[in-house]
Image 1 (cartoon, rainbow, N blue to C red):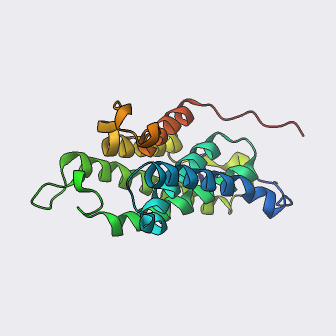
Image 2: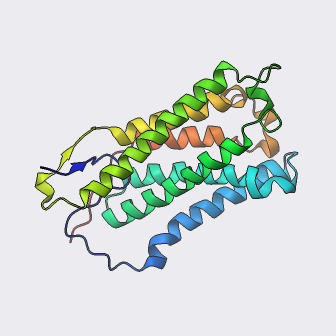
Length: 221
């Protein structure tokens, strides 16, 4: 029975690829992306915005983690090198998993008042955003499981894609998630803290770029 593989996902590996690449070089890029996203979030919300530094450990970290996770997942989908593709995809998934867990603890009117009615129930934009985010995360988990099953395959030719386009669909749902969450402020630059675009807008742009981008050609050996 052929292994279940999705060659459009962020974790896909190829048979016969060695693991000789040094761990430091493999994880340097994800670390740099995360730190850059954290610096941007701190400047936008703490330095130029009105968010207290007390919210950096969770509220601001959550924004940086989600932004970095989207970048790494999108980049890994287009990456040709299977080792970087796997490592960056795993780093992106870990950050998104953190984002999901933290968001569940922060999703209250005190943090996200614009998402709730006076009754305490979420409005339609918030509910639609949460639905898209949940579906995107489920697809991401499916891609991860498919990659674990791929380890059992004997030959690359014996693999089959269970759900073609799963990577693009996952990113598209992630784009819808951030769009419903923050589209109201995207076209109002005067309201942007320090004239820095919202992270939801940047995440949406990143998602669209990677959805439309083909996978990079493989290096010659």
